[in-house]
Image (cartoon, rainbow, N blue to C red; front, side, top):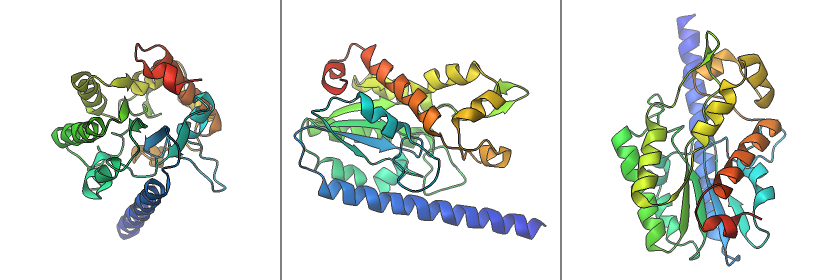
Length: 252
C-alpha cells in the first residue's frame, strides 16, 4: 500500500512538471508572436488566472477579467499551471519582459506555487521570492512597462468550519514589495479570504471544480466559471477603488 502511495505521488509530481513545462513553452511562444497592439495587457500568474481552451470545467479569472478591460487594449493571458517567480527567473522569462512594447501593462499574480517546497522547480524561499519580484518590477520599469501586483487567492481549505491560511507570509511579501516599488497592488488574497470566510466549505464548493480533500491538502484546486467571475470583479473593483492613473487606462 505504501509503495502504491509513493508511486501515485511520483506520478502526480511528474504530471505537474509536464504541465508547467508546457505552460512555459506556450508563454514563450506567445511573447515571441504578440507585438501588434500599441498597448497590451499581459496577464502572468498561476492556474487560477489562466485561460482554458480544453473541455475541462476550469475557468481562470483572467479570462473573466477581459470583459472589464478597455477595448483599445489588447489582452494576452500568459498564466498557467505551475507558474512561479522561480519559473520566471530560471527559464529566462524575465528577459522576455525587455522585449515587450513600451507602455504595455503587466498584471502579475505569483506566490501560490512559490511556497511549494515539495516541488523544487517551483519553490522560492521568502527571501528569494522578494528578490525575484523586485527583479521583475525593475526590469519592467527600466523598459517603461506598467506593472500591477496581485496577491494570490486564498485557498478554499477549511478545518473545523474555519478557513485556514495556506499561503504563509507570501501575500505579505507581495504587499511590501508593491509598497517599496510604488506599484499598484490588487489585494486579492484579502478580498478572497473575506469572501470565503462568509460561507461554509459546502457553499464554497459551488465556485470550484473540485473540493476533494486530498487535492486540497496538496494545494490543488481550481475555479469554475462562477468563481472566476467573482474574482475578476474583485480585481476590477480593486483597480477602480485605487488612486492609480491606470484605472482610467485599463478599465472600460
